[in-house]
Length: 289
Image (cartoon, one colour):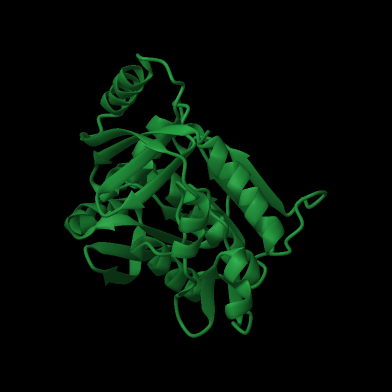
């Protein structure tokens, strides 16, 4: 007998996906699939009459708690399918430029000739390199990381930016995220890229909250975060980078966020080096001089 699953499909602005994942970490979901301004959340159905209603209420309360504008589009009990295979088939390698490609391990053989392959097997709810902000962050990191640097990756997610910094020559890394699944996924992806973590004191990955964490002095910070998190912590970023006149690379910003972020960053002492855009998203490279 096939298993039954509960599907809850919500309309959510794409820029709030990260907040939604945090809200959903307190729910017993087994997977999340992204589409444009929508999240489809899957639960193993408990086959009780009130399970569907209880999950809808619980998810609604979590979204309300994090002030996420979510509208339920569909609620359905569905039969088991081979979703995992369908999901794997849907993820293709992403060439960021001629040198760098982000690929799942099951398609690595098709891009093994790349100068810098980033092998990233995401959880179903995490990024794969297809998002504009990830691609722009990769482009700016390639311009920013110097051999022997110490880089911090704030909101590491799959670990893709920290892994890139290491492959570009960074000598020390600190990667943090407030989500348990992200940390587990990042550790796995470091291993997939042949980067040992056991007994490696040069790389530190931990679950932590940037709002309550003091950052050590470093040469660079990568922060692909929601605009509010960047604004709240930008002075902290500057203080961590000031000693080495380091570089801050940020994204997760929409075009209409640009001027606000520019003003606050300049007040802290940052100098804008580069700003790029892709669709409605932007990424910025700053120096703390």
